[in-house]
Image (tube, rainbow, N blue to C red; front, side):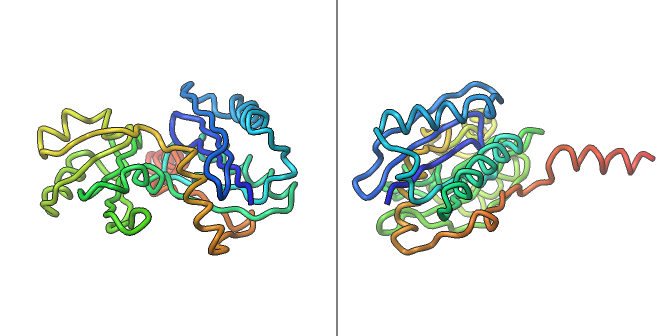
Length: 231
Protein backbone atom coordinates (compact mmCIF):
# COMPACT_ATOMS: atom_id res chain seq x y z
CA UNK A 1 0.00 0.00 0.00
CA UNK A 2 1.25 3.48 -0.87
CA UNK A 3 0.75 6.16 1.75
CA UNK A 4 0.73 9.91 1.15
CA UNK A 5 1.87 11.90 4.19
CA UNK A 6 0.93 15.56 4.73
CA UNK A 7 2.67 17.60 7.44
CA UNK A 8 1.76 21.26 7.94
CA UNK A 9 1.33 21.71 11.70
CA UNK A 10 4.41 23.94 12.07
CA UNK A 11 6.07 26.65 9.96
CA UNK A 12 7.07 23.88 7.56
CA UNK A 13 5.02 22.27 4.81
CA UNK A 14 6.09 18.69 4.16
CA UNK A 15 4.77 15.96 1.89
CA UNK A 16 6.05 12.42 1.36
CA UNK A 17 4.93 9.22 -0.31
CA UNK A 18 6.06 5.69 0.43
CA UNK A 19 5.13 2.18 1.46
CA UNK A 20 6.65 -1.13 2.49
CA UNK A 21 9.90 -0.32 0.65
CA UNK A 22 10.29 2.96 2.53
CA UNK A 23 9.92 6.60 1.57
CA UNK A 24 9.96 7.09 -2.22
CA UNK A 25 9.85 10.88 -2.47
CA UNK A 26 9.64 13.78 -0.06
CA UNK A 27 9.35 17.57 -0.13
CA UNK A 28 9.90 20.05 2.70
CA UNK A 29 9.84 23.84 2.66
CA UNK A 30 9.56 26.57 5.29
CA UNK A 31 7.80 29.69 4.01
CA UNK A 32 6.13 31.29 7.01
CA UNK A 33 2.38 30.79 7.04
CA UNK A 34 1.80 30.19 3.33
CA UNK A 35 0.60 26.63 3.88
CA UNK A 36 -2.54 26.92 1.74
CA UNK A 37 -0.75 28.11 -1.40
CA UNK A 38 2.18 25.69 -1.06
CA UNK A 39 0.47 22.42 -0.13
CA UNK A 40 -1.25 21.45 -3.39
CA UNK A 41 1.83 22.09 -5.58
CA UNK A 42 3.90 20.18 -3.02
CA UNK A 43 1.61 17.14 -3.28
CA UNK A 44 1.77 17.27 -7.08
CA UNK A 45 5.57 17.59 -6.97
CA UNK A 46 6.01 14.56 -4.71
CA UNK A 47 3.67 12.34 -6.72
CA UNK A 48 5.40 13.35 -9.94
CA UNK A 49 8.88 12.69 -8.53
CA UNK A 50 7.76 9.31 -7.19
CA UNK A 51 6.14 8.47 -10.55
CA UNK A 52 2.95 7.68 -8.65
CA UNK A 53 -0.57 8.43 -9.86
CA UNK A 54 -2.92 9.73 -7.20
CA UNK A 55 -5.20 6.74 -7.85
CA UNK A 56 -2.42 4.45 -6.54
CA UNK A 57 -2.54 6.01 -3.06
CA UNK A 58 -4.15 3.62 -0.57
CA UNK A 59 -4.09 5.76 2.57
CA UNK A 60 -3.55 9.39 3.53
CA UNK A 61 -1.61 10.19 6.70
CA UNK A 62 -1.65 13.62 8.29
CA UNK A 63 -0.01 15.47 11.17
CA UNK A 64 -2.86 16.25 13.59
CA UNK A 65 -0.89 18.59 15.84
CA UNK A 66 -0.41 20.20 18.22
CA UNK A 67 1.02 23.15 16.32
CA UNK A 68 -0.04 26.19 14.33
CA UNK A 69 -3.83 26.33 14.14
CA UNK A 70 -3.98 27.55 10.53
CA UNK A 71 -1.39 25.08 9.28
CA UNK A 72 -3.13 22.18 11.01
CA UNK A 73 -6.50 23.09 9.52
CA UNK A 74 -5.04 23.43 6.01
CA UNK A 75 -3.27 20.08 6.16
CA UNK A 76 -6.13 18.15 7.73
CA UNK A 77 -8.70 19.64 5.34
CA UNK A 78 -6.56 18.75 2.31
CA UNK A 79 -5.91 15.23 3.61
CA UNK A 80 -9.61 14.64 4.32
CA UNK A 81 -10.64 15.94 0.90
CA UNK A 82 -8.19 13.63 -0.85
CA UNK A 83 -9.16 10.59 1.23
CA UNK A 84 -12.86 11.22 0.65
CA UNK A 85 -12.38 11.71 -3.09
CA UNK A 86 -10.34 8.49 -3.38
CA UNK A 87 -12.53 6.64 -0.85
CA UNK A 88 -9.52 5.52 1.17
CA UNK A 89 -8.79 5.50 4.93
CA UNK A 90 -6.70 7.94 6.93
CA UNK A 91 -4.15 7.78 9.72
CA UNK A 92 -3.45 10.67 12.08
CA UNK A 93 -0.07 11.05 13.80
CA UNK A 94 0.78 13.75 16.34
CA UNK A 95 3.53 16.27 15.64
CA UNK A 96 5.16 15.29 18.95
CA UNK A 97 5.37 11.65 17.81
CA UNK A 98 6.89 12.76 14.51
CA UNK A 99 9.57 14.84 16.20
CA UNK A 100 10.48 12.09 18.65
CA UNK A 101 10.68 9.25 16.12
CA UNK A 102 14.01 10.18 14.41
CA UNK A 103 15.71 10.00 17.85
CA UNK A 104 14.42 6.48 18.54
CA UNK A 105 17.95 5.05 18.87
CA UNK A 106 19.01 7.17 21.87
CA UNK A 107 18.94 5.90 25.45
CA UNK A 108 17.99 9.35 26.72
CA UNK A 109 14.50 10.66 27.28
CA UNK A 110 13.43 12.40 24.06
CA UNK A 111 11.45 15.61 24.57
CA UNK A 112 9.92 17.18 21.45
CA UNK A 113 9.22 20.87 22.10
CA UNK A 114 7.05 22.87 19.68
CA UNK A 115 6.71 26.64 19.68
CA UNK A 116 3.10 27.39 20.68
CA UNK A 117 3.46 31.19 20.38
CA UNK A 118 2.37 33.50 23.20
CA UNK A 119 5.63 32.58 25.04
CA UNK A 120 4.47 28.98 25.45
CA UNK A 121 5.51 25.58 24.13
CA UNK A 122 3.95 22.17 23.56
CA UNK A 123 5.91 19.18 24.84
CA UNK A 124 5.80 15.52 25.83
CA UNK A 125 8.39 12.93 26.83
CA UNK A 126 9.30 9.69 25.07
CA UNK A 127 11.52 6.69 25.71
CA UNK A 128 13.05 4.15 23.40
CA UNK A 129 11.13 0.93 22.73
CA UNK A 130 11.82 -1.80 20.14
CA UNK A 131 11.18 -0.30 16.72
CA UNK A 132 10.44 3.22 17.85
CA UNK A 133 9.53 5.44 20.78
CA UNK A 134 6.76 5.44 23.37
CA UNK A 135 5.15 8.48 24.96
CA UNK A 136 5.68 8.47 28.74
CA UNK A 137 4.08 11.79 29.68
CA UNK A 138 0.88 13.60 28.81
CA UNK A 139 1.23 16.23 26.05
CA UNK A 140 1.33 19.63 27.74
CA UNK A 141 1.24 23.31 26.84
CA UNK A 142 2.75 25.98 29.06
CA UNK A 143 5.56 28.52 29.52
CA UNK A 144 9.18 27.44 29.22
CA UNK A 145 9.75 27.57 32.98
CA UNK A 146 7.08 24.84 33.40
CA UNK A 147 8.92 22.70 30.85
CA UNK A 148 12.18 23.19 32.77
CA UNK A 149 10.43 22.32 36.05
CA UNK A 150 9.05 19.15 34.44
CA UNK A 151 12.54 18.15 33.29
CA UNK A 152 14.03 18.84 36.71
CA UNK A 153 11.32 16.82 38.45
CA UNK A 154 12.10 13.77 36.32
CA UNK A 155 15.88 14.18 36.74
CA UNK A 156 16.75 12.15 33.64
CA UNK A 157 19.24 12.76 30.85
CA UNK A 158 17.22 14.34 28.07
CA UNK A 159 17.47 15.14 24.38
CA UNK A 160 15.26 18.05 23.30
CA UNK A 161 14.16 18.52 19.68
CA UNK A 162 11.80 20.84 17.83
CA UNK A 163 11.45 24.51 16.96
CA UNK A 164 10.37 25.36 20.51
CA UNK A 165 13.58 23.91 21.92
CA UNK A 166 15.57 25.88 19.35
CA UNK A 167 13.73 29.16 19.94
CA UNK A 168 14.01 28.98 23.73
CA UNK A 169 17.42 27.28 23.81
CA UNK A 170 19.01 29.83 26.17
CA UNK A 171 16.13 29.83 28.66
CA UNK A 172 16.05 26.03 28.74
CA UNK A 173 19.80 25.62 29.16
CA UNK A 174 19.86 28.25 31.90
CA UNK A 175 17.59 26.02 33.99
CA UNK A 176 18.46 22.49 32.90
CA UNK A 177 21.54 20.82 31.44
CA UNK A 178 20.54 18.85 28.36
CA UNK A 179 21.25 18.45 24.66
CA UNK A 180 19.19 20.30 22.06
CA UNK A 181 19.47 18.84 18.57
CA UNK A 182 17.68 18.26 15.25
CA UNK A 183 15.04 17.82 13.98
CA UNK A 184 13.52 21.28 14.22
CA UNK A 185 10.33 20.39 12.32
CA UNK A 186 8.32 17.15 12.02
CA UNK A 187 9.44 14.99 9.10
CA UNK A 188 6.95 13.95 6.40
CA UNK A 189 9.16 10.90 5.87
CA UNK A 190 8.71 9.93 9.51
CA UNK A 191 4.97 10.44 9.04
CA UNK A 192 4.90 7.90 6.22
CA UNK A 193 7.03 5.44 8.22
CA UNK A 194 4.86 5.64 11.33
CA UNK A 195 1.66 5.51 9.28
CA UNK A 196 2.89 2.44 7.41
CA UNK A 197 3.43 0.61 10.71
CA UNK A 198 -0.12 1.51 11.75
CA UNK A 199 -1.50 0.48 8.35
CA UNK A 200 0.03 -2.98 8.75
CA UNK A 201 -2.04 -3.28 11.94
CA UNK A 202 -5.06 -1.78 10.15
CA UNK A 203 -5.10 1.10 12.64
CA UNK A 204 -6.76 3.55 10.29
CA UNK A 205 -9.96 5.57 10.48
CA UNK A 206 -12.53 7.17 8.23
CA UNK A 207 -11.83 10.79 7.19
CA UNK A 208 -14.61 12.16 9.40
CA UNK A 209 -12.91 10.63 12.46
CA UNK A 210 -9.70 12.65 12.08
CA UNK A 211 -9.58 15.58 14.50
CA UNK A 212 -6.82 18.11 15.29
CA UNK A 213 -5.11 18.15 18.68
CA UNK A 214 -4.98 21.74 19.89
CA UNK A 215 -4.08 21.51 23.64
CA UNK A 216 -5.05 25.18 23.76
CA UNK A 217 -8.06 27.05 22.41
CA UNK A 218 -7.51 28.59 18.96
CA UNK A 219 -6.58 32.28 19.00
CA UNK A 220 -9.99 33.33 17.66
CA UNK A 221 -11.73 31.66 20.62
CA UNK A 222 -9.30 33.21 23.09
CA UNK A 223 -9.84 36.68 21.61
CA UNK A 224 -13.63 36.25 21.66
CA UNK A 225 -13.58 35.09 25.28
CA UNK A 226 -11.45 38.11 26.21
CA UNK A 227 -13.94 40.46 24.56
CA UNK A 228 -16.84 38.87 26.45
CA UNK A 229 -15.00 39.26 29.75
CA UNK A 230 -14.43 42.95 29.04
CA UNK A 231 -18.05 43.55 28.05
